[in-house]
Amino acid sequence: MTEHADVVVVGGGHNALVAATYLARAGLRTVVLERLDTTGGAAVSVEPWAGVPARLSRYSYLVSLMPEALCADLGLDLDLRSRPTASFSPTLRDGVADGLLVESTPGAATAESFLRLTGDESAYTSWERFYDEVAGLAEVVAPTFLQPLPRASRLREDAETATWDAIVEQPLGHTIEERFHDDLVRGVVATDALIGTFASLNDPSLIQNRCFLYHLAGNGTGEWRVPVGGMGAVTGELARAATHAGAQLRTGCTVTSIRSDDDGAQVVFAGPDGETTIDCDWVLCGAAPAVLDELVGREVRTKPSGAQLKINLLVDRLPQLASGMDPETAFAGTLHLGESYSELETAHAEAAGGSVPTRMPGETYCHTLTDPSILGPDLAASGAHTLTYFGLHTPSELFADDPEGQTILAVDRAIAEMDQHLAEPLASVLAHDPDGRPCIEAKNPLDIEAALNMPGGHIFHGDLAWPWLSGSEEAVTPAERWGVATAHPRVLMCGSGARRGGAVSGIAGHNAAHAVLDFIQP
Picture: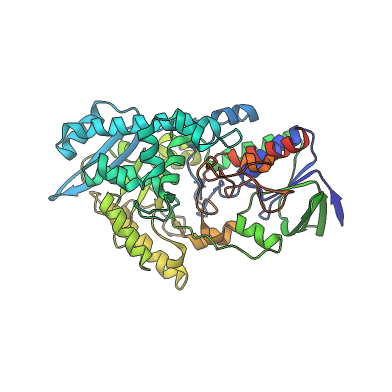
């Protein structure tokens, strides 16, 4: 069976839904093909434990990079809430339990926490100065995300030279070591460079710098917000917008090949009605570049490797901390575990050597402190809470030979890292399902690959690129100008593998759609 469309979007993740909305609004016959039985990709909500009314964000879990201008343009009805705590980083020094508190709006409590931890009145001043400088760079870069790629030279002219050099030109580790002296403070700064990125802070490739910039550039503020209703509410609203615009969303459709030439393309997929071919003018690929290689019959480039461990938990109540910090303050923001600068570097070296880190670095937060709506009313009233853990430096290769055993080991070490900062073991407050099973699930990179067809479980589909053109780069076609080009003129990237992909942002979908519109409506 052969059909016809103007545009076929391969994959039904959040970027695909954004692209489909813009293209359908422009009057193009747009078909989205999703392999799974629901759209949303990694940004979905599920009830992982039978008989337990807790609907968690299974994979992606916070929103930062999605521009407010994009949400307004698409008419999205979303409630993205700020967290009262930015982070709490517990520490144990000389047998004394304490920690570093950073409020979302830093005030006296943050300043006092820095002084107590470091004994240095200048430590907090250095922190404020550094993040003011980073915010200045973000204000220069963030407005360009929904525009054709700017030249690096133009952005450098608009940014402070010293800040540009510190974030863009030299390994981030050098900057952190120069600007901060306390090991824990250094680590709290460094973690934003390592979310979904396996690297030393001094990696000469600067992939850690690119990750750092993206994580702190969203909307010019870098604030990570809680989606009310969970990530499924975000993609549910995007699906509504796409359908309302006239896009056709088809689930249970596995694309098996893409053929294209200068005049158009053909997409073949296996769906509920058997094998179907769609002749179209354009293909937008929301899948990873390595998956696109397979679909077009090209030799697959080097397979990426993800490096994160996601653990979802439900607790009967929040555990008490050994430091005496109020759990509702500590868990409301990012709770850094094993993430001092030296611990991060040691963990990276161990993982690069083929071992699960002895001291697992990771971060935890409690969604339900900001948004209890993801729990059933009775469960919420009982005092139960969700905990989300995102572990670093766990590359997919660590799990290849013994996925179950290595995952159990990594989870045990992650919990042990938390337990050393608690006044009671996490197991003592862990909730159980009606059959007595603990409410905990873990997803290593190979689990993510199997579930979402993300090669290597890499959440960004590959290493992030700078969101601009270098001096030597050409950008002739609309696809090149918008950062969504592939080797095939009629096939564009619209997912995390695009030039400004990564995270839940919708930016890549917006840019791919506008590249198509620029082609047909110059």
